[in-house]
Amino acid sequence: MATFLLLHGFQNHRPPGHWHHWLAGQLAERGHEVRYPQLPDPDAPVLDDWLDALRENLHRPADGGEFVVVAHSLSVLLWLRAAALDPDALDVDRVLLVAPPSPAVTASIPEIAAFADGLDGLDRLAGLDLGSVRLKAPARLVYAAGDPYCPEGADVPYGTPLGLDMDVIPGGAHLTPDSGYGEWPSVLAWCEDPATRLGPR
Image (cartoon, rainbow, N blue to C red; front, side, top):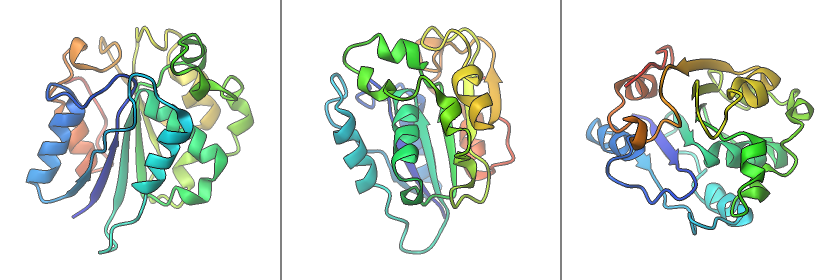
């Protein structure tokens, strides 16, 4: 059995209708350990507080099993900031980065602007392969064309500069319940088999 750490985004209070909530339940039913913390003050997040919460949840499972992170939206930027600060601390086996907001959009929202600091030139991070930080498989970036929070497409600021494996979801917007992402079978399939390609709900 594996351990999964699910990291939510801005203004997310872990609602039952969100695919993260659904995924947590599905993984737990299958006998996996699931960590799905409520990150501090999700409506007015403080980067340092979120970094502290991330560190608190990064301890490897005692049984030595696989450790997998599934980050959505603002928590993708949280993961990138943590990787830039101390990549050796991110001792996980694989990572799914879902629907990150663009640095420009993030910087335009006062409550979360600090998460974008230093990410406007991600080419500086190109030497940091997030998929090889003690990982057995590459990090995967999953995003939808037409995401209003990343209108240029997440491949432009993130996928291409970081050399990430990518799946593009048609018509998924920001991959939230508002665009129909409650149940999402392919993300569950990826959790149990990293060779799975992510597709629409």
